[in-house]
Image (tube, rainbow over all chains, first blue to last red):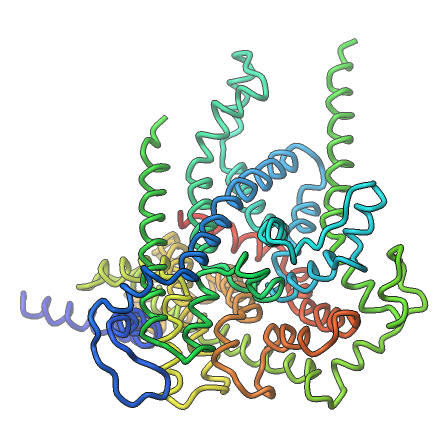
Length: 296
Length: 286
C-alpha cells in the first residue's frame, strides 16, 4: 500500500519535472549560471580573448574603490534615480485620479500608454530631435515665449534633467495603467460611507485611496528604482554619457569597460555585482519601509 | 433647485475630460512631430518656425531606409530580423513558461516551493548584471550574430516573469474539469494540452504581447551580441543610423523610428484590452 503510494508519488514528481525541464534548462543556463559565473569572474583578471585567467582576490573591487569615473557614474545614476522617482510616482497617480473621474477613460488611458510601446531608441531619437538646440521645436517655442534657449543635452546642468523628462514621458502611461487598476480595486462603498460621514474628496484621498494604494505604490517605486539603476539606452542615444561625464551611468561604464576598452571582463563583473548588491539592498529596504504597517 | 448639484457635477466632469483630452494630445506631440518630420522633403525639415503640416509630403525617406543599398541604411533588413527574433522569443517564452507554470500551480512534488521561490527571486536580477558572462557563453556556443543568440537569452530574461504570470492564472482555474479528465484516464500532458491551455488563452495572449514587446524593444543585449550589420535588430540599426547621418538630415532617421513603432501600434490597437490586462497582472507582483 505505502510502496504503491510511494511509486505514485515518484511518478508524479517525474511528470512535474518533465514539464519543468525545458524552462529550467533555459533558466539555469542563461540566467543562473551567468549570475554566478559573473561573481567568479569578478575575482579574476579575465579579458576577452585572453586564454588564461588568474584569481586576483578583491583587486577588481579595490580598483573600483579608486576608479573616479566609476564614482561619477554611480553618483549620476543615484541622482537620476532619486530625481526621477517623485515625478514617476506622482504624475501617473494624478493622471489616474483624474481619468478615473472623467469620461473617455479607456481612450485617454490608451493615448497616454502609447509612448510606452516605443523602444528606448525611438524615444531617444524623438527627443533628440525635439531638443535640438538650433532647429528643434522645443527651443523655438521657448524663444517665442521669451525664455532663453538652451542646448539641453549639451550642458552639464541640464543634460540629466533632459534624460529624466524623456524617461518620465516614456513610462508614465505604464504606471498610469497600473494605478488605474489599483483604483478600480478599491471598493466604492468605502467612498460612499466616507461621504455620508461628511468626508470631502481630499480627506477620502488621504484616508482611503492612499492607504489602499500602498501595495501599488510599493510596486511602482521598486520597479522604477530597479530600472533606474540600469539606465543605459536613453543616455546612449541622447548624450553618449556627456557632456564630459555628466550623464555617464553605471551600466554605460560597465558596457564600455567590458566591450569597448580592453574587454576587461573581470573588472566589469565586479561592477555588475556592486550594481546587483545596490539594487538588492534598495529593494529589501523599500519592502521594509513600505510594507512596514499594512493593516488599517 | 434640486437639479443644480448634479448639473454642476456634470459640467465639472466635462471640463475635466476636455482638459485631459488636450493634455493627452499634447503628450503625444513628440510622436506627431516624428511622423511629420518623416514625411517632409529634406529641405523643409529644419525650417523655423516649425511646420506641423508636412506639405508637400514625400515617402522618400521611407523608401531610402527600406530599400537603399547603402551600407548604413538597412532598416528593411533590420525590420525582418526584429520580427524573427521577437516571434521566436514569444514562442519560446510562452511554451516554456506555460509548461513550467502548470506543475507549479497544480501538482504537489518535492522541491516545488524552492523552484518557485528561486524563479520569483530572479525577477530582481538586473539584466545588466548577467551581461558579461552571458556574452562569454554565447560566444562559446558560437551564437554571436545569430538569431538563436538573440532569441534564447531574450527568452531567458522573460521566462521567470512568464511563469509567475501564468501560475497566478492556473492556480485560480476551477479544478473540477481537470479532475474529471484525470479520473477518465487522461494523463497530465493531455489535461494540460486539451483543458488548461484552451482555457488560458487570454493570459497566454497577454504574456505573448509582453514577450513580443520586450524582445522587439531590447537594446543592450543585441548591441553587444551582434556585430554583423546584416543581423542587427531595429533598435541597434536605428541607433547606428543616427551616427551615420549628419544631424541635419533627420528625415531618414525619423522614418526609421516610425517604422519601428508600427508593429506594436498594430498589436496595441488590435489587442488593447489584453495589454492593459497584462500590465495589470504584472503589477500584482509587488
